[in-house]
Amino acid sequence: MSRNWSGYAVTTADNKAKRITMVKATWIVNKPKAVQERIDPRITAMVGKGLTRGYSQWIGIDGYNNHALIQEGTAIIYLNGKSVNYAWYELIPDRENNGNVINHPFLIPGFTMKPKDVIYAKIKALGVDNQWQLTMINKTENEAFSKIVKYKTPMASAEWIVERQMLPLFGFLNYFTHIINTGTSVFGNAAVEIDGKTMNLGQLKSFSITMRYYPDASSEIKEIPSKLSKDGRGFSVDYEKTLNINSLIKSTILQYEFNNKDTNNIDMHR
Image (cartoon, rainbow, N blue to C red; front, side):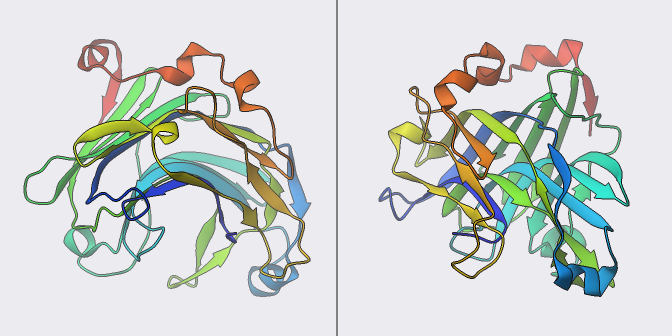
């Protein structure tokens, strides 16, 4: 159980491996079904009624069983009833690029993103000087983002996640956003490179993560991941129920794999 993550993860320890050097996936940006599903009185007391609600879909390396994390994804935040859609990446902690350990996402300027868009993302170690290649492509809008960052991380886990957003409070604290019905999030083409071999979730010892919004056992407000698809590369995350992923993942677009030739027809953002 987690208070803010739902999806799947793999670890090197569970698979008797040394390191994970790549993670990738394709997902559909989903539109929340109910923006004002739950109000958390503790958040209201801090920041006011109805100020923020949001969630994100992302992939990452590390973060499950340590305090490091390199990740990229898409997010939808509701500020006083108006939605803000954006793509982002984040390094935790960010000593190399930020000069300190303050964690915050870097927004990707000019990268268009909206519900129902198909997003492909990949994070890969380059094997030189702790460098990582971040790639994100919006297949619907024919836009792409590519960036090389320097980051040292244990490479001990990989994740495919729907996350209840955390936002900064007073510039230095983080708080959970109010609860929304995120609808159904569908991931496909989920795979990692582990000890030099590219493998999908079904070929590895992977495990699901269910989100419980409150830590007490009586809470029934959940984001629940499905079982893996038959090909081992896909799953869905749904609000308070489990769906049959094989009926959702028939679209071939969810098996999209980036090819360098695609850059000829895609607007690149760096």
